[in-house]
Structure formats: C-alpha cells, structure tokens
Length: 399
Image 1 (cartoon, rainbow, N blue to C red):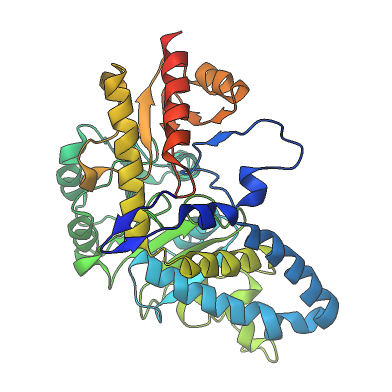
Image 2: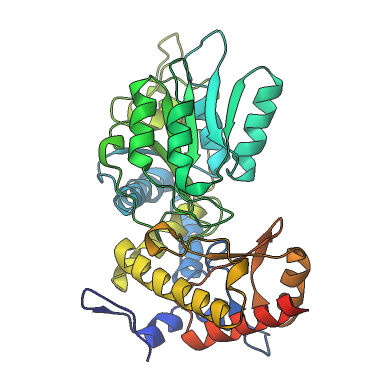
C-alpha cells in the first residue's frame, strides 16, 4: 500500500484504486495503461456510472416530477459543495451550465453599455475565451491582450492595464499551457472592482487541485470552473460563482433565469435573484447526478482540496525529479516552485503531437497544446506508473 500524508492523513491507495475499476482496467484491454491525463480527462470513479443509472431510474419513476423531487435538490447540494471546494462560502450564489463558454458569454452580454466595451485579458487564456474575445474584437470591442511572459511580472502588467473605463477583467487562476499559478490574484481582482470592471476568473485548472485564497477579491469575483478536469465529474457540468447582490441582466438569457415567474407574467424581462439570473434553459441532469456521486466519493476518502494539493505536489515533484535525472529538466515549462505550480508538468517539444501519438501506442496517455506536452498525474496513480510513464516520455523525446 502506498500512502500520501498531509497533516496526519494517509490515503489507502489500494482501496482508492479499487473505486476506479472501469477506468484503470477497462473491459477488453489486455495491457494496462498509464493515465497521465489527470489535468484533462481525469478518470471517473465507478460511482459515476452508478449515478447515470440512478438518473434514468428517477426519470422512469418520477417523469416530470424528477425536477422538484431529485434534480433541484442535487443542484443545491452540489452547488454548496463546489463553492466550498472553490474557497467560497457554501451559501454564495452559483449557476450551472454545460460549459464555461456558455456562462462567460452570458456574463459578457450583461456588461453595462458604454460607447465601447474594453476587456483586459491575457495571451494565455484557454481557446474558448480567446476565440470569443477575438471575435468580439472584430465587432469593435477593445481587447487588451496582456502578455503572460515574463510570468513573474504578470500581475504588474495586469494592474497597469486596468485603467478607468475598463468593462471587464477576464483571466485564469492557473495558466492552462504551463500550469503556472497566477500570483497576486486577489490584488488584481480588487483593482478591477475598484475601477468598476467586472472581474472574471477562470478557475478550471485550479478547481480541486490548487486551493485559492480569494482574500479581498471574494466580494467581487465571478469565478468559473467545471467537472471535466481535476473534479473527475466528466463533461456537461460547469458553473459560475456570482457575487452577492449582483444585479446584472444578461442579454443571452433563458427561461430558467426567472423560473419562479412562470405562473404569471410581469410584462417585462425579470430575473431571479442570485446565480439564477445567469441560468439558461432545460438541461440534461445526468451530469449533475455524476457530480453529486463524485463529490461523495471525494468526501468518502477524506480528499479535501488541501489533501489533493499535497498529493499533486508530491507527484509533480516526482515527475520533475525524473526529468532532471534524465537530462530533460531544461525542457520543462512549468514553475519549479511548488507554490507557483499547478496540477501538471509541461515540457516543450517541437514535435509534441507526434510524441503524444507514439506514447499512446505504448499505452501511456498524455496530451499536448501546440509545442508543449502536458503530463498530469492523479491521486489514483502509483509511483511505479508515474515512473513508467515518464521513462517512456523521455525515450520518445530522445527520438
């Protein structure tokens, strides 16, 4: 048995791995595989499969009654647990969507009208936000693309870009290509709020692996994340935390945003209070069932975010040590300092896509973004699997 220890906590890895029997030993697979994809598609525990059956059974039993009896109570419980794992109060406002792009665009359409919208962001944002902002720029929105390099001074450049007249700040808590934890996040968000800009933080690469201390930013920040990566909930469930007292009115809106007024019309476009004002329309509840089951799974094994962080740092530190020992330390893009490193290790390679395919043929799964390979451990991996995966990576890099 291998254990990770954090403040007296020890994970029974054998029991934990047994909870992932279908992902770690898929039916029909003759050879084991190494899943270094914990930063992307993290394996689902078997409880997620059982949850999908429960979703079907509730629909069969309750028909339309499933919403009040089973779906909405899960929505409330999952929302409270997610807020706590994000570092917010369990009673804060939250809204759900099938992807973060849907939620972010609703927020953008709620920005107060000015002669010209101005949005401050970075050149290191994920593709969906980058593409949407680039398209808005074609329509006349002013986008200030702040360079992420050098990364140690990113906060200073963001603070300089946040001048009066800015409509929105849209940045990540952890950069998706390099696993760099953005420093002084609370200070940057507080500055945005001070000048009247709406602060949005993409916390996807932080959720459930990097604890976030929001500090003075907490009263102001909109924060999005989702279940596809470190949460192990799968696709189709994302969310946005909404500050208390928010009165914004998104133009891109659905009927769930004023669900309570269905019995009668007020004659105008009304919005429910809290996170519901950013809601869309009818959604597939199966992802919510998976999320509820997976949160229960984390709780059952005592895996709080600080404990998951301790496991992650030990594993990424092991990967860095193996790369250094193999003479590949100079290719590492991710920060060396634990407090600045997220949940994966990034390695530069001119033929990153080819390396991914060759490793896949060897039953080692990683991914790449442009010329950067991303190596993502997860708490269900053994040290032996990590060593095997990195050894194969080093061999392929040498080719």
